[in-house]
View (cartoon, rainbow, N blue to C red):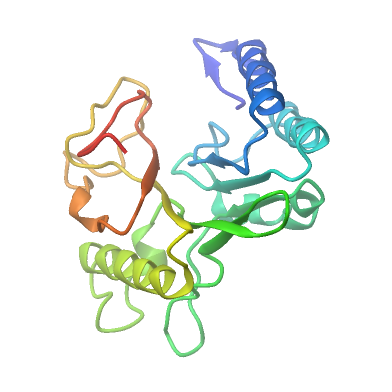
Amino acid sequence: MGQFFYNHSRHYEHQQFLSWLLTQIQEKQPHALLIAGDIFDVINPGSQAQKQLYQFLADAHRIAPHMQTLMIAGNHDSGYRIEQVEPLLEKYNAKTVGVVRWNEDKTLDLDRLLLPIYNQNQDIVAWCLALPFLRSAEITGFNEHTTNSKNAIAYLHQQLIAEAKRRKTPDQALILMSHAHMQGGETSDSERPIIIGNEEALSTTLFEDAVDYVALGHLHKPQKVGQPH
């Protein structure tokens, strides 16, 4: 949201999409809506873009009050900024994960990244592993497993998936939502390069078979990477 294309605001286009999405929510009444990053086009979005998001969340909550909206920060977003409005988001049954946080003992704060998804009866039907865009400064240097970005990213996935497997029951789905460039993904002209070349591309081997569905942000083209789900 808040994007300009050759100095032309795309607010109207975005509003048309959100109206369509509200219709889908009204008809399907899903347990959760996942937004995999790049909520806004810039780190400091204008008031019109922010109002558009919050109005959508209010409308979605009105027509599907049981539905949870789970959002992660992308590389276009400020993770700290979008977490600042958490009290407002709670009113609309929405939650945002903007940054990875660590405990005082240098272990990963898993509770903020493992989000239960409930049905209308408040039974847990799935767990969502919510990983925002991983900036090197926020994930390296905490312990022997985070000496560099590659090791830290692998460590985060291993820790999260292992903890999710401990918490879930056989009838609960495991969903991983991430904002990353995966190997084999097709880029378009609108992504902002994170690292020169293709060095930031991650391997799909990070996703264990225990994960039932992976929702990826960052690449601006609908596509499948590795496997259909």
